[in-house]
Image (cartoon, rainbow, N blue to C red; front, side):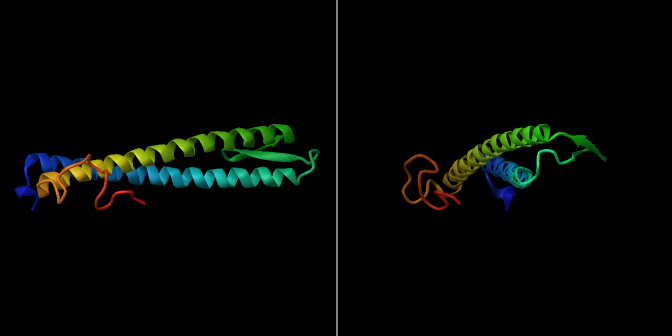
Length: 133
C-alpha cells in the first residue's frame, strides 16, 4: 500500500516511525531513571536509621570500599538530585516527542484525507488523538 502513497506521505510515515522509536527509547530511559531514583531514595531512608559510627561500605565496580557516613549521605543526595533532574529532562523530552508525533500525524491525515472534516485550525489542535495519554 505504501507504494501508492505520494512521496510526501511516505516521508511523513518514515518520520512518524522515527519518532515512535525515539519515544520508546525515551520511555525506557525514563523507566530506568525512575528505578534508580527509587533505589537511591530508599538507600537514603535506610541511612537515616543507621548510627553514624557504623562501618559502611559502598560498591565500586566489583569491590566494596569502606566509606564514612557523611560521604555516603552526600553521594546519595547528589545522586538523587541528578536523577531528579534527569527524570525531569526525560519527561520534557517525552512531551516534545508526543507533540511532534501528534502534529506529524495531523499533517499526514491532511495529506491522505484532504484536510479532514473541519479543514481548518492548527495541526494537533483537536480531533482524534488530541490531548494524548
